[in-house]
Image: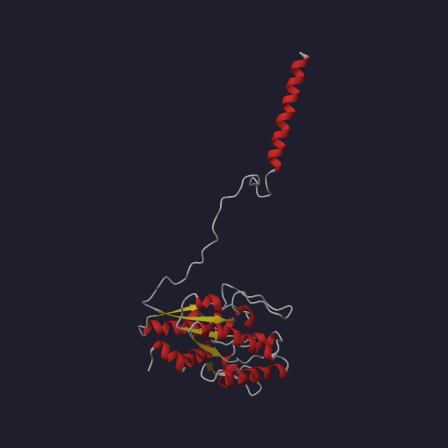
Length: 261
């Protein structure tokens, strides 16, 4: 009897130890780490445009103005107006909007870029210039009105970022438009003047590609004229978005791409 009890007790410990070993082989997610994983190939990047030869693509990258902030409804923002105009006119052109509020040139740099300057924003690989080029666009519109200056990035730093973004577009044989600075009610006059300084430098660097509407919507000190202001000192209302839309619509590069006379 006593021997039988010893045998049962020994069997109990063997089972317990076996169960414990099995438990220890599990990861925190409950997967058995002792089992070798199946060889899964690296994920294949899917092209967002599957040989859509029937349409041209225009891709917009940028910040809150590109995203439509300040407009009362989506159709009143400049990108929305552009989309509707192309549809109304029967143009076989699709507009893709990758604009995100708060973005700077750093967020739009090509995938793989790492800034040599500390504490700079990381690239958004879903919304940057590389993401835009995946659509095989006929045109990329870059709309970054004032956030780089709001972030106190240096002039040459900003200009160099634009050079990298534009060189990436041009190397893919894609056309581009860069919108110039947009007025903003910075408290400091010096910061508002920087909007104009950067704007003028970019006109000199990209004379046939920079869309200039700064003076149309600015006060003499580069704040936002009340008629165009959404009321927060940063964004444009429907009237301001209409100015950008009309400026893009009449811009020679856009007219050529969209086949407007």
